[in-house]
Each structure stands twice: as structure tokens, then as C-alpha cells.
Image (cartoon, rainbow, N blue to C red):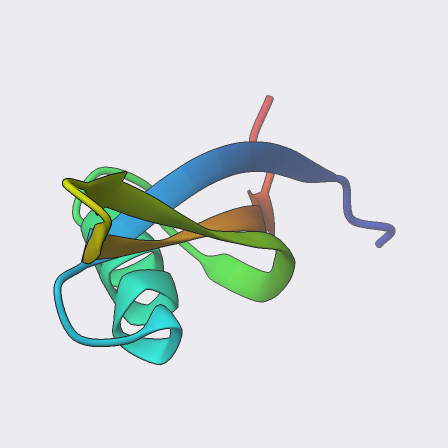
Length: 68
């Protein structure tokens, strides 16, 4: 049987790294979505306050199996 997957765009944040930000995005999405399949980091950026980096941000596309 063929499968259909839905893709959502989420942003994870971390005070320490982009890797941690991406991990936070996936793990948080996994708390309310089932059957996550693939995560693709599509954008990385930084939050800056008073000329200091205060947060790493990772925009992640996450796919999960669509159930009709």
C-alpha cells in the first residue's frame, strides 16, 4: 500500500547550538505527532541581544505519515 506523508515547518531554539535547536524541534514535535519519518534542517539563524548571541534557531521540515 502506498503511503502519504505530511510535512510541517517548525523552529527549534537552543542557548547552546544549532544541533540542539534542531533536536529540540524534532523532539517537541514528536510529543504531539506520531510516526515522524524525516527531518530536514532548512535554515539556521541566531537571535542577538546587545550584540551577543542569545539563541541558536533551526527551522526544520518534519515529515510524518498522514492518516486519513
